[in-house]
Length: 104
Image 1: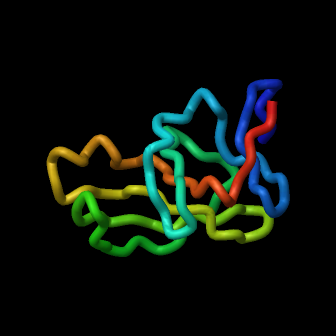
Image 2: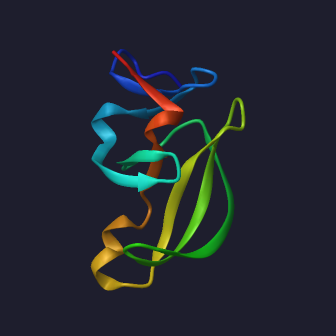
């Protein structure tokens, strides 16, 4: 799926389109590799199995997110938050900054 001319983020490993700039919600997340971005939607990704994990902001059920073309681990998807104040994260994707680049 191409973006139809809209700016987007691509996998830094294989250039596969991952997310539209218009779906970017926040750049204020931290992942193992450093900075990470929250997106409303992601494309051309595959989800791993769901699992529970404890993060700085609370306990979540998440699924790792992989590039559908090269299988690079890109980040995770929030499936469920066990804390009411973090429910806004449910269904969103966190993609690591070092695993993608922005193309206009």
